Length: 89
Image (cartoon, rainbow, N blue to C red):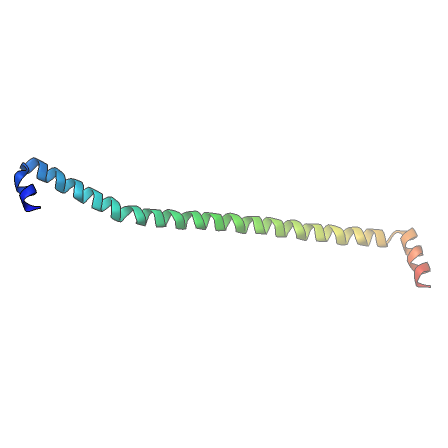
């Protein structure tokens, strides 16, 4: 290895050293950036899922209130009350 480096011109040795440092830097930084991106994407997905959960829960609660209101409305109808009294007697 030393013979190869000794036979190279100084410019070639500098370029080789620069290329080595560049490759090493990219090899170290890339996994870190990918992990950070993965964490950011996971957090964004979690926020979206939580928002969807809140929206669905709200819609279900709204439907429950509507069903309660409609059942109270129907229960107060005279025909329904008469039918209920007949069924109980």
